[in-house]
Image 1 (cartoon, one colour):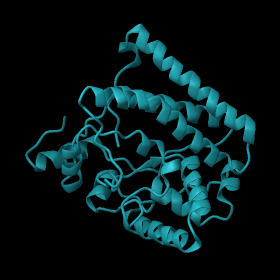
Image 2 (spheres, helix red, strand yellow):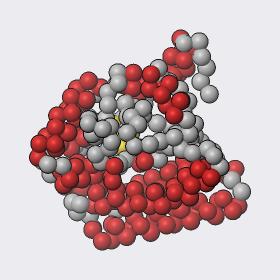
Image 3 (cartoon, one colour):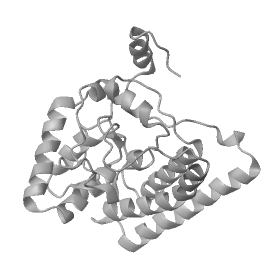
Image 4 (cartoon, one colour):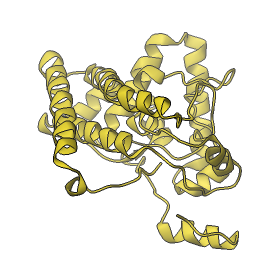
Amino acid sequence: MGLDKISFAELPDDAKAYFQGVYERALSQFRGIVDEYGISPGIARAIAEARVAVLQSELTPVINSLDAAGTPVACAKGCRCCCTTTVPVSPDEALALIDYLKATLGEADFAAFAARTHAADARGHGIASVERHQLKIFCPVLNPEDGSCLGHAVRPVACQGYLSMSLQACQADYEDTPRHIPHPIAANLITQIVDSTRTFVLSEAGLGNAELELTAALVAGLDTPNPEAGWIRGDPIFADAVYTPTRPEDLARMASERGETLD
């Protein structure tokens, strides 16, 4: 789920000031959550809910501007084209999903989610992103009935910030990876700033951070008693859930085999 890149130094001064404001607003929100909750179970979900709200607030003007320009974001509820990609998450994001789903799903539905999670991890554990995508291993947080996200209110930043400008490209990527998916650069920068600020505040509070693979991280959390307390203590509960990215040379090789070049 790579984001299109641009150097902050390349931006004009007014744009730098705007993004500095994004950082300051996010910093205030996340530090406020830490001050309110302290370092105790419940902070992961609180941080996730705050991050979803902050990022939604910051992205809405960008999305509205794209709509007004006649180049709307292509993402819509029920579209699952990107839901077989490998999702990188931090420990707090995985823990927030488990906490939220325990609170919002009935016992049978939560058990079904746990079973889907273990089955998905059994098929794709440790497999690099593009190979996993080709196996069509759907995210276990998806509602199997309508394709909606059961954890939408606390979805990882990699999902929330993934705004596609082309449904056609997404469909082609789903059917025959890899494809370049165009993203709005302003939205990518906002997402990076908010995510980096969240990481900074958690590190400032002494909470561990690592890049994990979503399904493996969910399995680790589901299989560990009181996983958030363990994470807060520094227990290595996510040691077997490390994210495995696809190497650029592998993407280039696969594109070459199809007679194509990557953008």
